Structure formats: C-alpha cells, structure tokens
Amino acid sequence: MTKPTPFIAGNWKMNETIAEAIALVEALKAEIQGVSGVDIAVAPTFTALDRVAGAVKGSNIQLAAQNVHWEKSGAFTGEIAPAMLSEIGCAWAIIGHSERRQFFGETDEGVNKRARAAIANGIGAIVCVGETLDEREAGKTLEVVGRQVTEGLKGMSAEDSRLLVIAYEPVWAIGTGKVATTAQAQEVHAHIRQLLKAQFGDEAGAAVRIQYGGSVKPSNAAELLAQPDINGALVGGASLKAADFAAIIKAV
Ligand code: PEP
Image (tube, rainbow, N blue to C red):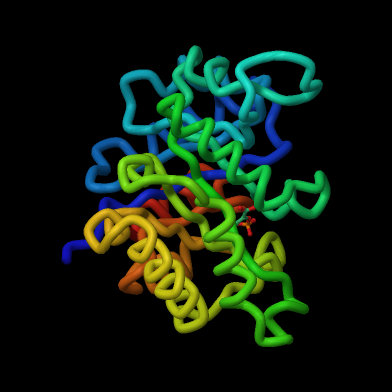
C-alpha cells in the first residue's frame, strides 16, 4: 500500500507577536515556493490566526489552531469553538498536546470530545499522544500510547478518520533535543497503525497520517520520515525558524 501524503505541521506554541508571525510565515512562503507532494500547516497563537490566515491565502500552507473546544458557544472562558476557527479558514486543530495534558489537566476523555467536535465541524484533528520518560523506563510505552489512542478516538468512524491525524510525541523528546531513535519511533507508530486498522478497517487505518514529534530538525527529519509508518512531523522549536522548517519540509 502506498504511503499517504506526508504532513508537516509547525506548532508555534505561545511564541510570536502578530508582526513576528506574519514575518515568519512570509519567510516560510519564500523558502518553500514550488514545493509539492507534502501537506504543510502552521499553528500560530489565537491572536495571530486571523492575520496569518490572510498571509497564507493562495499558498500551500494551511492554518492550524493549538486547541479547540467541543461546545458551540457559551460559558467556557479561555476556550474557542470549532465554528470560530472555521470562520477564519482554520483547517486543523492540534488536540491533546502533552503541554495541555501536563499543565492544563487535559484528559483522554476531553481529547476525545475536542477531536470529535473538530471533525464534526470539518476541522482536521491532530491528536497528540506520547509517553513520559518514567512510563518509557517502566516499559509502559505501548500501553500508555495505546490507551491514549483508543480513548482519544472512541466513537469515531472510518469516515471521521479522513480528517484525523495522530502525532506521536514522546514527552521526553519535546523541546529537550533528545530524539527517539528511528527504531523507537517506528515501533510505536506501527502499534498505533494496528490500532487504527482495528478501529477503522485496513484501508482507512492505513490512510491516517501518523506524525512524529519531538526535537525534529533538518538533520534528523529525512531518516525519521523514511520509516514505513511515519507520515510527517509535528515540529515545535524548529518551526520558529523559516529556513529550518523549510529544510524539514524538503526532507520529505
Ligand atoms: C511539540 O511541541 O509538538 C514539539 C514536537 O516540540 P519540539 O519540536 O520543540 O520538540
């Protein structure tokens, strides 16, 4: 079976003012002119989303949000509704990032509600999963990631899976400079692939992109992306430098 179109997404986290975000995306546009065969997205802060939406119009860069709520509107201070993201042309939402789980108490149940609401509103859900260092050292990686995938995708259909992306991000590799070896990453990706096929069927399960995230940079991207079940990358730090992010995209 042929691999799905690779997908490289940049998570800008709580970085970049609006002016900096525009400068970054303009520099990125210049760097990746003419690049094809790869899907590309950037996830600026909420305040910069609308202006970046204008800047990427007509380019091959799509827009992602860093979170989305499951309700349409109401008393949910600090949250954002799916339709509010669609309104400004946001195609994707990152859901359940380990920083959301670690610092803001997000649970698998909440991740499931957010992801299903995004998909029901036509927004692609990038569902993040990954084990901590303690969990890896205790030999629980596949169990933990398996639970996050199974609980996070509960109730989703094969039809829903067309708007689904999984990002495997070992927590110990995020922002630390430590990268999972290609063998470590591929082992977990293959496990996730089995779970996706079990839930959605062989064809739909094979078509879901599984990104790797955790200190991806130009020097390690090509080797990671060559693995059979690695279909892209979710990039933090290196996505804040247009030349580095472009080099990762070109490594595809
Ligand atoms: C991330 O936060 O999604 C991430 C992968 O960060 P970094 O690339 O900086 O490790």
